[in-house]
Image (cartoon, rainbow, N blue to C red; front, side):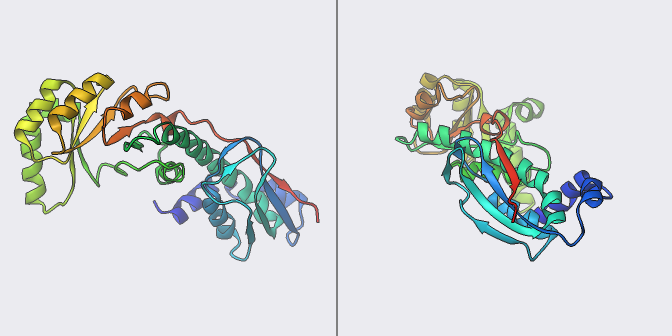
Length: 279
């Protein structure tokens, strides 16, 4: 689903066959102006999407940016002004706010993780633990917050996780069958393998033919030990149970990537409001 399709579907969900509150009380030709007010500190995100929402309803809507996606913002500031038909403003209001509040919360939490490990080379990754049909925007918010996107879905990278390995009969067979399949179908995809123990790491190293080794639910000491075995042969990723209290300990190990599902599914929406500016 691209952005235009998302906006159309989201507006249909909200507006249905008519915004009767507006239709009943506001003349069809009324023009107006509104401002996006920021009500708490954080990283603003979703301004670009908000502009697309207003312009989807009214291509001639005038959108004035006062902040940009990724800016550090404070309570009381204004992110943008929009001038358009009052009907457009009121139809777009809730969708624009919902998207921006969610994206800003994700960007703000992501920035906290990124800042926590800024002295280390490790990169903060997101996961597929996202809201259905809103993934592309949540992952955009991660990028705005300074994080890095993992795979977008099941189609753009192979990740052999515990269930794949168990159903396939073991790490060796899972890796072998995956490489055969990719060659047979001329697919140029990276392969990541999840390991659950040091023995798993040794088994992956014995087989090879992968791009990244995930160290799942390893302690920082175990991650450091595993990286000592892996060396520079493959990318490494720490995952599982990582939070702001322990992320620095993982970054110190020298791991390449730290995946944190919480930057999306534990993010708290930022408080924003769209207020009419009486002309």
